[in-house]
Amino acid sequence: MKSLLWFLIGIVGGFAAAHVINKNPTGHEVLAEVDARIGEFTDRIGEAYRGQEAKLDDFVSGARDVAAGAVSAVSDAAASTKAAASDTVSDAAGTVSDAVTDTAESAKD
Image 1 (cartoon, rainbow, N blue to C red):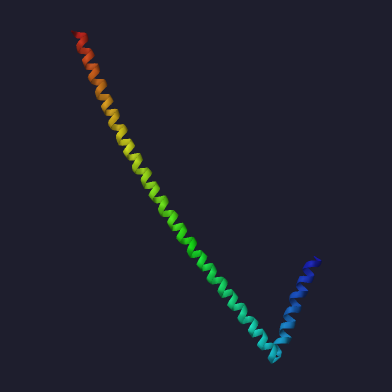
Image 2 (image 1 turned 90 degrees about the vertical axis):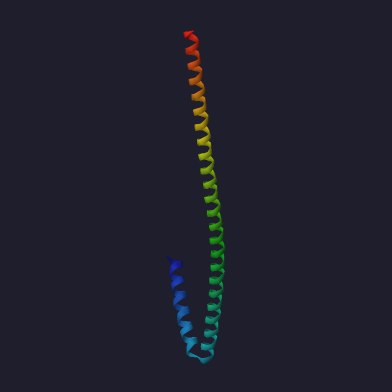
């Protein structure tokens, strides 16, 4: 609680000192220069942030494209495997059917 009190006293004191300094023409110029530097700093930080955000967006877009390609490739591979398995099962069923027919005919003879 004591730290909060000192923090608030510091803020109020800073505003009071800035108000007194701003009344003096030289102090007004100094505060205007400080404000301009702070504005320049925040502009630079904003530009850097937007640059990093653009890089991250490019990275995410690339990762999304790669993931979509991988999903498409897996889907194509699954479809091919399913078709091959279906063909193999059909061929095996035909072979078994032929073998049963041949065995039945042999048994009749």
